[in-house]
Length: 258
Image (cartoon, rainbow, N blue to C red; front, side):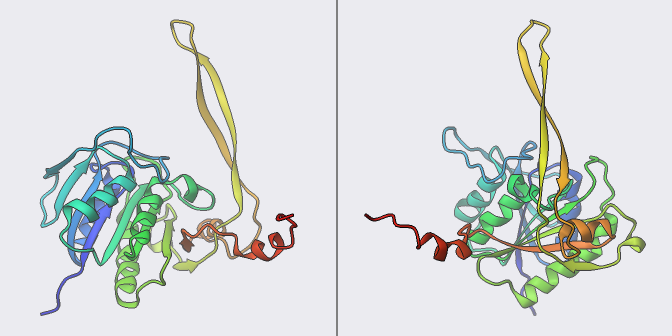
């Protein structure tokens, strides 16, 4: 009898979010599932970890199913750290994060708690994938993405990932029949043009509300933004080695040791 893979699931929208509930159902058809996810929304937390306060973990039951579930008071990265160090008795065969409510394409990957959780698993040598659907609605329909997610996960389990690489998968908001397929892409160059809307409380105290618009600076037809706009699922291999290797030779021409 073939042994089932051990799959760790987390997210940044919180353990009750419909996206993670959909992901759990898909992963239950593939392996033995352990869920360790935030007890409240942690979107935009990036790779933050908790160092100045206590962490709490509680075993809970939300939906019927064979999975084990734990809610955590910390960040997505905290969830992965606790899972590996305290909850699991062995290293998982795979970590999947999501399904995120909203895009993590282009520069959004930097801010994403969803992707930071996957990266944390990658740092620990665990193959990891972050999944996001381009729909911020809490009641988003995840059904069209399920078969594609299953295919990607099964392929990663069979083929493996190169050391130091994590997959960032974004799924367009389309009906299943309208998704054209999966494109391997690079991260598009883009940024946020942000505004801080200055407001006042009823007591007259100033406060700010962050708003902004994403600007795509990349016209290439091999980017995640292009693929998503064309109706494809984008899959970008990302790395957590932030060294700009191409810059080292140039920096070595600087006279810094006089």
